[in-house]
Amino acid sequence: MREQYLGKTPGKKSRTGREVIEKMKNENAPRIRITRAGKMQFKYDFSKSDMAHLTDAVSWWNSIGRHYGAKSKEVRKWMLDSVNYELDHFSLNRSAGAKLGERYLPPTKK
Image (cartoon, rainbow, N blue to C red; front, side, top):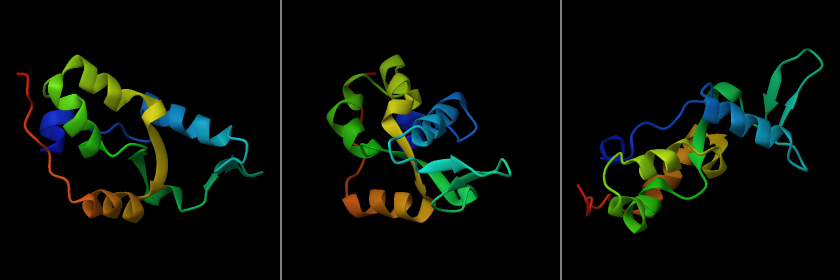
């Protein structure tokens, strides 16, 4: 249902992903840094990180997004806005959503 209603989550190499990485590098206590060898260092192996929503996608969809309609301009704008993301270890990100116990409600607008 998630992809059907919200569309795909942007990848780490997308424009949104690059903005998230820059944001995390420039935080007061940076969570991403560049080593002297020029490699990106994250608290986890970078290859095991996911683009994680700060507000769970299912919660946002059920309270706001569903009223715009599946993959609407407003829904896609939210999905592509780097302000809504951080990088997190894939196992933490995926289990957090599952623990919510929420299900995607159908759109109220076609």
